[in-house]
Length: 330
Image (tube, one colour):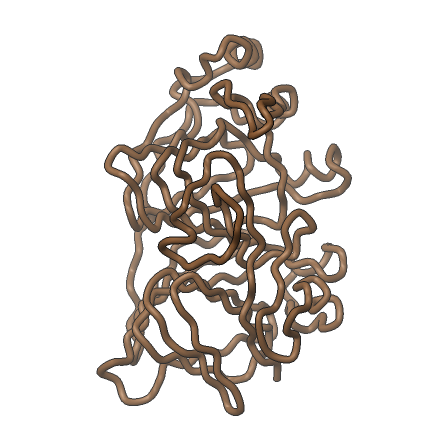
């Protein structure tokens, strides 16, 4: 049986980031602004490392390479290079609005991006400002010529559908959906293990060296869904109660499954149980509160912002504390 371990994220200082990952989640980095923490990642553009246990200090991909059973037998785990997980889990602080962007499908990415996977993703909103919006698809049907002209003359935002964003919302973004996260959003992102983003429009912003950020208009035109966007609706969510916790399914798709766990063992004798099967690993991301994950022979205290990797076919673990967690698997 395999034992869980705490992860240390990789950090990104994109220009639209802020301070909330440091102030609210205790992320320890000199990067400023801090836009993203890649909590569980084997991607070469930003790889997590192991923060404790017998794998302490090792890159997560090396751990997966040396212990292939940790990934599990889920079909998604096959077809990836050795050492790679099928998903990537992030925290994102959008102090300013993100670029208008789109991600490719698996088929396009494998053909045009050296065999990489595409990027379908979901966002769970941890917090948002009163005026925070998400651009989600187009207001009306578009054609390539119109969109290309809009990209050239800076009018892309006028064609987008906007949705108000609030705490506890869930948004699922299929590859091909043109989108832009608005200023004031703090989100947890679960996605395919990919870093392919095609920028369509970026408000004329420049980086810290005064250079305009690269756009990828032709690739965006190749992959964007040009039909009018469907107004996103919040999924029906049903709490399932167990002694010491409640859980609800946030998203299930062919690439990943995400649940929210509301842990509260203050009035329960014993602890909430957790064990993975042989099919898939789990990632536990603590979004609020604190607690401890215990098993026979070990324990991991966790706090808001911590992420724990639970290998497939893990030891029987117990959770104790008062916390909210996202549980991600395949």
